[in-house]
Amino acid sequence: MSSVNEKKVAALEAVKYIKSGMTIGLGTGSTVFFLIEAIGKMVLKGLKIKTVATSVETEKLAKSLGITVITLAEAKRLNITIDGADEVDDHFQLIKGGGGALLREKIVAHNTDFNIIIADSSKRVSQLGQFKLPLETIPFATQLILKELQEMGFRPVQRKKGNDDYKTDEKNDIIDVDIWGVDIKLTELEHMLKNIPGIVETGLFLTSTDLVIIGKGEQAITEKKI
Image 1: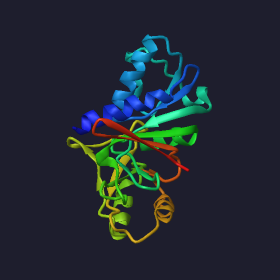
Image 2 (image 1 turned 180 degrees about the vertical axis):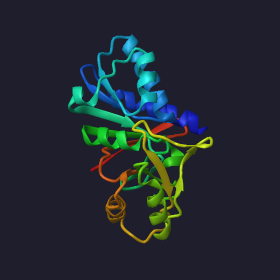
Image 3 (image 1 turned 90 degrees about the vertical axis):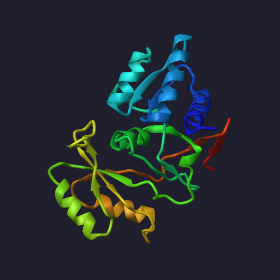
């Protein structure tokens, strides 16, 4: 079974948690594409929901399919958010941000009652860090942050889009760092990185996830935090 089909399997399982009257957070990325597509079909059949998008890309797609999109300020609180991940470990800890939306994704997750992560089986890992950890940084400080992270041994690389610096929806930069094998607890790593002025947010999502749905072959495997 291809990863594309596994993403679709996970997304179609996740829509079962959506009910009329809910306000839903919509994540960003290739797995969420299938989710939004499925929600669009449900809206055509009469589903009444409001959504908050975690990226401009997601907002455009949702609106094109007739899905109502409001701001987070208008929503105030979300019933559920469904998002993807670049890595998910056995403790429901994530690395996110491969799609560049980590800041908005973390804000939306924080303001949600129940967070669902959907992914194909390749994203399930025993230890985080094979995927590089994204950090969103203020452009004013990015070059100095790169130097500091290099001295700390994280082998930082500023993300590019073609020949230009990659920019998030908030017009910030992204630095991808290597945390594989780092001998420090993830909670301490998160605190240490965010203590560097100019790092706005990290792609470590350590406590927000309530439910994980993994597409594995033709099956959707659901794991709920106890």
